[in-house]
Amino acid sequence: MNEETSLKFTDEQFMRKALELAGRARGRTSPNPIVGCVLVKNGQIIGEGYHQKAGTPHAEVHALKAAQDQAFGATAYVTLEPCSHFGRTPPCADALIRAGIQRVVIAMEDPNPLVSGRGIERLREAGIQVDVGILHHEAATLNEAFCKTMTANLPFVVYKTAMTLDGKIATESGDSRWVSNETSRRYVHQLRDYYDVILVGSETVLRDNPALTCRLPGGRDPVRLVVDGELRLPESSHVLTSSPSSPCIIATTKAAPSDKLERLKKLEQVEIWQYNTSRHVPLKKMLQDLVQRGWISVLLEGGGRLAGALIQEQCIDKLDCFIAPKLVGGSGPSPLSGLHIQRMNEAIELYDLSVDKNSGDIHVTGYFRHD
Image 1 (cartoon, rainbow, N blue to C red):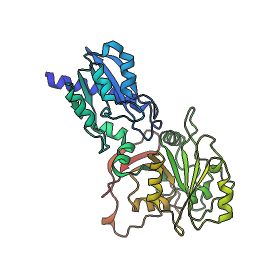
Image 2: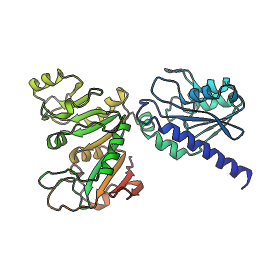
Image 3: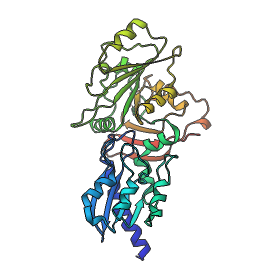
């Protein structure tokens, strides 16, 4: 192994540790990115840290505090370009410079076009060696929600669904408990803990009456968002009262009955977003409104009509699908009943596919391409 190859191996090793640290804060830092930092000197880690919550010290600050005076002459491995501007916290690039860091290895530049490259420039102007791009793909995937919001002013949306091998999300009688197995369903609650918002259509509420909470010990309930253009959901729906810690938002239109609208507005933890449209909620505008509130990741859990409409508007970024080794036949609903493609050569193709069969279900993930 030559010196250059050895250095790259070492860089990747410490960057993976920084990425692992960053991942500990998934779902806790919005609208900020998740970032990890490792400080290394003479081949040994002398400090590490990660950004734990929006408004609190960044990863670099935690790592420098742990390293103290040992930081002088060290190498910093950071999963995202250190910030160079004053926000809710001081610039991290300046903190690295003051500590006497000799080299900074960065996985990826900040995707915010207003700040991208400025932190790197400041470090280099201070005489610090900066290397960018180590494990870039892994870092970008870890912060895919932040990257999407910074470049498109829209949240990152993943469609989670479970279906039988013959493509049904329920039997023709409407029974859907349970399509996937217990292991797969536990993973879904992990997703609920990670994502800012869980999104469903009114049909899902009417059919299943879900609570849409996270049932993991220590888990965090996401914001619940129900698209209900005509305000059909029953006032006794579990989703309205299931979480004391996060709001339930109902996105509706001027077609909503005014008396029901006023009653729902009086419920604690319930917000009404009423759009000036006749029956259909303007989905892209609704997603932009989420970003304005600081919510940058959305877990879509149903139903098929809403998913199809969002795909047609190119608002879904990722598919997270569990295929159960079951057959039910009949005319049960499909996960994409709202998508109507007439020709096979117009079918939507996913990329960067991943297939996992370890849970007993077939777990398929893939990404959508947008124009």
